Image 1 (cartoon, one colour):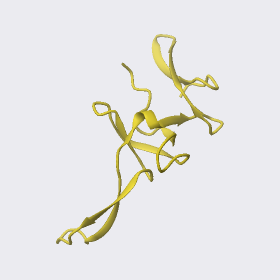
Image 2: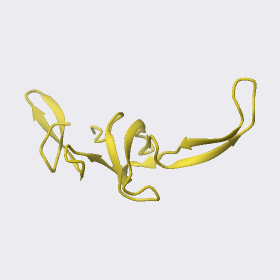
Image 3: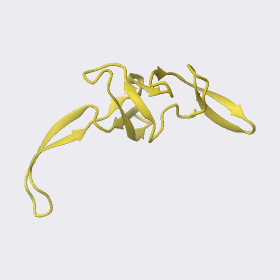
Image 4: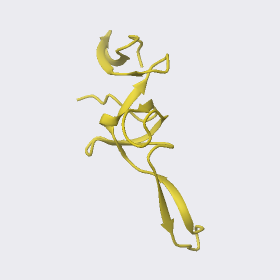
Length: 101
């Protein structure tokens, strides 16, 4: 099945502690049905100092479930994603506006 959300898409969070925030997808893991969004679902990771890196409390974006994300359309609203054939290629489109993503 084709992916409704892909790397680089601008999404809005529908549920959880970051509800209502927007960001861009940096990576998607279709096997676990999760994505990492920049600036969303941040956890603090304490690391030791090493020769290469400074130690301390380092913020890290954790994966969030794809069901809690929705793509943002041209109007800035959350929308569902549909698929249609544009000539001989399959394209994604926003259900609210009908625009090709």
